[in-house]
Image (cartoon, rainbow, N blue to C red):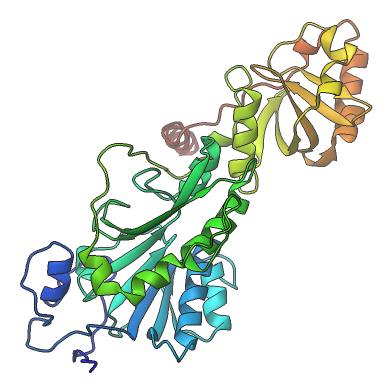
Length: 407
């Protein structure tokens, strides 16, 4: 027999504030104290088995796949896993909203924009790529707490950008972790379920996100194994009280952090970074922030980076000249710009300088005229240099100076 909890309706607090007493069942499962027995503090019993009422928090493509899996489970009337599903996302400049909102609207699911989290009653919350700290008052409104679908093998890469840092640091193995949310800190709660997957060679962050979203929400086949991964999130929800009881604390060793990427990360350091490090950077953030460099006091964005094959590297034009990191040479046969870095070369097929230019356009419009004016110059004199973007502190100081000058 299913026993349902009775509660008075009231808007859930998003960022904090006092709320009603949390369910002793949730407090016990979460290790927050209280006594077992499944009562909500006033004698009414909480649901002990599905179907669950779920409030989902998410934003991006990864989160959309988790929401898609939850919606499919709700539509599957035979399993009776979810009977209520509502969505919280964050505001977006785009009229259509972020991917999670687009999917929710298309699927006719109720949507709220943070900090509004609706006024309904739910059994469990689910978070994926939300990027907002949830208050203890909000977490304790859910009898079974809030679960987080995190795209890494915690405790590695705690924070808002785990997929980017996985690619950036050349990890060969990653995964998805289903964990419990804890207030005040990101990604420190106990682990309910975790699966690993090899990182496909030379995959971009966007490509890896697609792999992990299927692993976290639906079903994906390992590139090295004929076995299928079970749906992590759905399997946890099917056995929610048991999953919470069997949770394990995260290890204290192997903790790494994945902070948000700043614009300064996109500035290539030619003297310090190897070709492998530059390609990892390109695969990690190139579709979000184009890599940047400086040429003759002009900022240039490098749009399309490619590896340089061995036949090009043996070209006498490269081997017969004294070059230093940042040196730029146009290779006519391959129609690429070849740029020297700490340990070798990278190829560039297009750049942006005022407008998008192919390597050939950049050579004809900029490099070739410069060499005509400076016929005795060496490649090291016509080179890309590291772009130094001002820090937040420097920007603030500059704004104060400008304000003082204008007053």
